[in-house]
Length: 461
Image 1 (cartoon, rainbow, N blue to C red):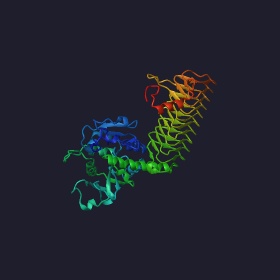
Image 2: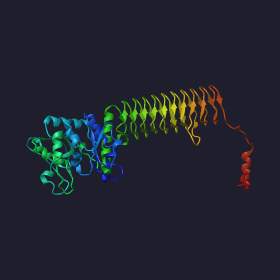
Image 3: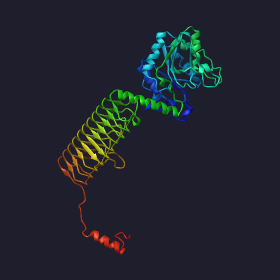
Image 4: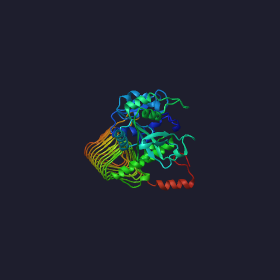
């Protein structure tokens, strides 16, 4: 169910599209259900909110025409429900439910031969959550609301088992019951919980599955809830990676998005953030203070104090400190992008080095090349981008500017301070700079002018 308005979020973004660890909130229960074996997944949406771009591939949507409650949401999906043997009802704003818990709920439901199975959990401070009242034999007798004074008796309020808002139903029983619930209440809404008495009246059991994980009850209604859910999801992700062989030096300062993939023996140092579909190979050390976004690192890569976006770094390469790799940067095996280096949309060959203070954009740098400090590819003429080609084994002198389009052949050199505007043949030395001239006695002349208060050459004292 994902048709709620989410007004307490105070956002133009639909509530269920707010991200939890880099993944839209609604995608968490969807992916958990799919992992648990759900064959058909339908998301009930509002006609005012288009969620399609955020939904995983193969997910259907059902429109709830009016905002008329959780029961109204199921009424809008009645045809889908009637065509299903077992129906699992999840909330799009409960991101922490897992495939394992879903599997246990469905197994409990099927083993009990129940018409409905309610997921419950124990809370030390149940607050306003609906209390589970069980009858003889342990079946659910009723769910008592506790939102307003007088909803529940003191004895009922003392119950610590609460409704987690997740259910498994026999499809035919739910389709029948949801068509018969009414909305004769102050809000004029249809409530999902109202189907339970109708299913019992039909002679079917209302079973319960007590989840050992209280996180299934952590729903998101506002930004405070969102931060709480994100923090718990982050903790779980970090623990899962650590148990799989990743060293996290300081979990409190490390962020890993849900879709990041880490091999064993990766080390994450403090201040590291891995966002989006980032992957890191075995033996690599990331951080401190490094951010990777949708980037791919091979084995044994080091990346301290750097920022990488949509790029690829080969095995054994080193990046940083203080490097910025932009989209399209691809570093070969054993290559280097050093201190204060920026690279975008460029191929850096195996073993090639861009050690420091350089910008490489729209370029192909051959294997084994070494770009001296301050090497710049001038790739933009004010209208279009052009590529630079640097051959294998090239050595550029410090402060070389390569004015694209230009090619430096294999094994060639450039002189320090050169502005290269024409191709340099393989094995040649390219030099393009003004001839130096020295003015003898210049320092003494300037000193004398200053003492006499005389104006300088430009007429200024």
